[in-house]
Amino acid sequence: MATQHIFTINDVYRKSLEGTWTAQGWSAGWFGGGAGVVSVVDRVIFASDSSTAVAKGPLSVARSQLAAHGNTTDAWFGGGSPGPISTVDRIIFSSDSSTAVAKGPLSVARYGLGASGNMTDAWFGGGFPSQSLVDR
Figure: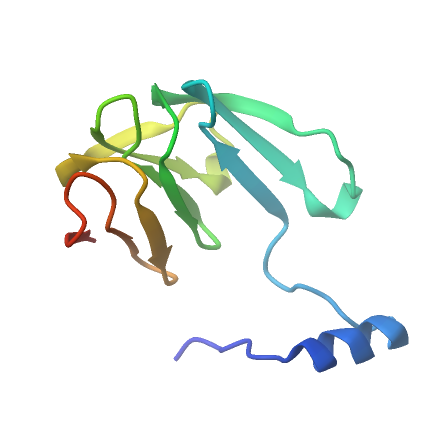
């Protein structure tokens, strides 16, 4: 069974003052797409505490208003605009790949959707024009 990391703001505050707060398991943040319909994917390494993101390559389709989810092994970017778009891209962290790989379409193309997930799957839900759909 996976370990759950549940904490309160008070826990974070107390441990921060003690110097014992750590965000275990996450070494970097990945960001893709954006306003102006772009295909850029950037990575920020948390340990360097740098404000400079490193370009890691393009999404397979330039877009904005997409949704993303990540776990300890992969990042998933789905949907978007202009469109709507149905593309879902995956970046595998261990290969530190320079290009996102298209892994299949959403059941219906849409933008402005949300994403959530766990250690094995990502769910993409809502969006326009099909607000009531959820894809895994």
